[in-house]
Length: 291
Image (cartoon, rainbow, N blue to C red):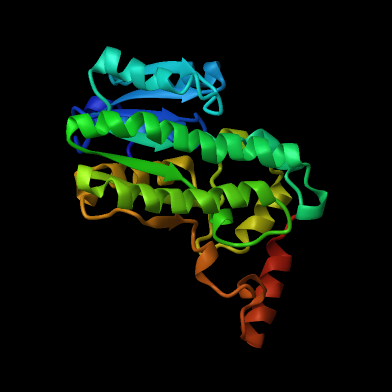
């Protein structure tokens, strides 16, 4: 059954009622911010693209939610305090954090190790990993003062498996998984939970602009579920992990990838069954567009 998309006051389950969240990055982060608002939370959205922030908060406001927008580069250590100060100034507290901002503009230049420009490595780490750390360092003391909180860091399936490129991105996401486990371990006594979410192919507006139909088809071949994941699927998982329904979950890396990492590498070619492989080849050839 499709997920509801009507007004926030009608659609909310109230699991985050009264909570205040910071959300960085307005790609998947936009869907996360909307999901938090629909659960009764108030949100500060921070993205390097100020227009994306405004569009996100305008949609929340149109659905009777409460949100603030802020243009910010999380790689800038001096600027990172701003969304948390904004949350306290306008909403009085910080309970939740979704670290979603990432340096996606660098991925076309993120190549194999010997071909990798070290500036791409440094900038990717500065945003994806160091930026996440900086946001956590701002949120944790505020959560401690409130008696606890929850953090979700947006990792990736690329942080769990090797690839022919995306070296910097993958390394930053693998490190984020351990950062999440470390945070969960170090601040459990303060009632702060932290887990990472590892999406597979998730069709944001930004990604849709980069992938043609043939690329999408090739990526989908390796999924068990025969569709592309929308940002709303990831957001639903994030909202759950932030809520008290996930009160006994911390320090985990939760995949949401349509089954990409659940099978043997030869799955898309029929696995270990010759009959399945031949049938798969026939069906794929019939369905495939000309590339």
